[in-house]
Length: 102
Image (cartoon, rainbow, N blue to C red):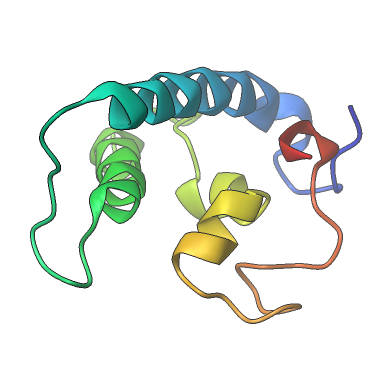
């Protein structure tokens, strides 16, 4: 696994693995659920999943020095840039991403 160098270094690696597992469970549930959850045309299930992830991460930031930096994690996710339509080479969609999400 090759990731971009960052100020947090390998500190993001456990979060990358956790996000991957959570995302796979979420996708499996989306594919098998009979009911769809969509708050509005802008807030569909994938967006709500990622927003909730970041909200939970931000809520723990004040208590933990090693709390998840949501931006650092999600800017490496191909799904994030697709779901939120981030322009290529923008801060949340760099051209060089961590290959964990490839």
